[in-house]
Length: 262
Image (cartoon, one colour):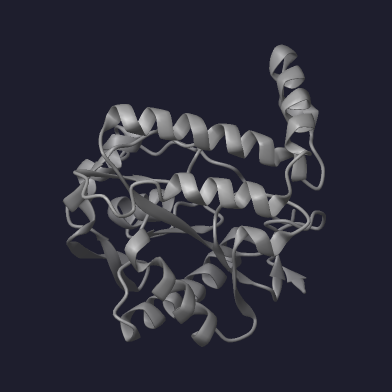
């Protein structure tokens, strides 16, 4: 494995990965949409956000099993489809990923240390009140799962928060990783077979609680990202403003995974 020398090289690696994901989805008639920072870069600049070090896409719950099967059947080395359980015995988050095993992002660390296309799942939800309850439960399960981290860096937390993470970690140790992942999955899919007016991004538990109209993801429009066009929701402006407000004004945000060589 080797490390990308610069963010420009990493963007080229990620772009090739996205092209492969896009090809497989088209060949298998599977919906997906650019999401979060990747979507902003496409809409605002037709390019990657300069500091963005991964690709975000959204997949509808009803399409996810076909998406997963298609990726597993068609991705070729060094690309690999992974789910949270594949990090066992350790936990990072509840996000499936397509990773490039040929490269690493930084010299140390093992989890989320490859260039990745992050797959965010979009599930059904009845209304804003149900969304708040759902996010609370998902955050609790996520907090319990932190006990399965390879290492917990308590310097990330302050005062009572640090104490809370310690004690909830003790409770989390009572559950297996499989149990916690199962608990999270059942919550995500609580309204899977219910006709609802809204959707939400269910494995973005520590993100902004955005309630999307159900038809937000029923139609796509193709938006240029670098040299090719990729699908975004037709009303991408309204979707992005729900999460970011004025997304057209560049603001550095998000978790940084890549360490650029000096």
